[in-house]
Each structure stands twice: as structure tokens, then as C-alpha cells.
Length: 137
Image (tube, rainbow, N blue to C red; front, side):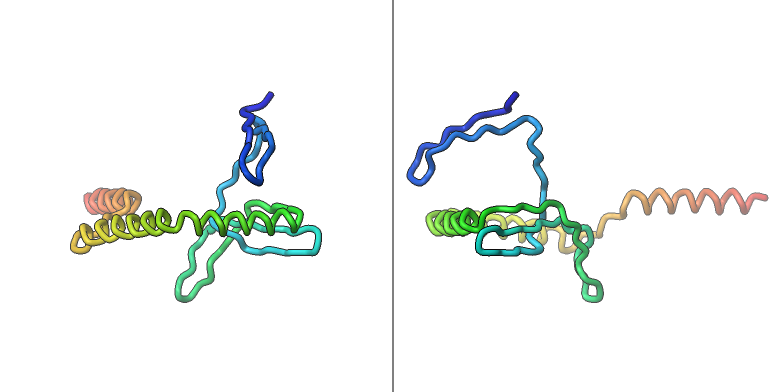
């Protein structure tokens, strides 16, 4: 049983692709390693579990490894480059819009007090209750 079949009919693409129901979908933060050979390449994708600080290195967990014919990888890189080049104005506009939205959020919260995490507030309340109970003895 399949989820969907897509027909690609455009220059450089003449195929049908079926997406099975059980096809894995994995979120990744980036690429940790690429091994390229003359026939086969391997790409290791990762998720970040701890972000880097000034004293500690970033901690990553490998999320998926893709093995692909090197020729297909080269074609993919060329297609992505062409897509970015063809969509440069849209990509730059989206980037500027995201930067503007982020700046607005940062400005709005520049002088506000940081939120107290719920777990800290609950722990502080419990601590006060314990102290007040123990002082009654």
C-alpha cells in the first residue's frame, strides 16, 4: 500500500516516484561528515543535543547515514546550486524578513525581565513551604 505517487515531467526529470506509508522521515540539524569515493558517497547527518559554549564543544548524535552513487550526489549539488541561483531574490528576501522579525522580538524583550522557568518557581515554592513547616516545630 502506498501513500502517494508523484509524476515528474520536466526537463531533466521524467519519472514516477511512490512514497510508501512506512517511509522514515528524520529531522537533522546538519551534516557531520561526507565521504566521497569515485563510485559511492556516504553522508552522515546529525542532530545537535548540546550546543557549543565558550568552554565546551557541541555535542551531536548521528541521526542518519545516506549512501548514494557519487554521480547522483554531484547532480544533486549542481541542481541545488542552480535552484539557489534561480531563487536568489526570494532567498535574500526571506532571510531579511527572518532577520527583521528576530530583531523586533529582541528589541521588544530587551528591557523585560527574563522569565523564571516553571520548574525553578515550583521548587522555590516547595522550599519555602518546607522551611515554614519546619520552623513551626
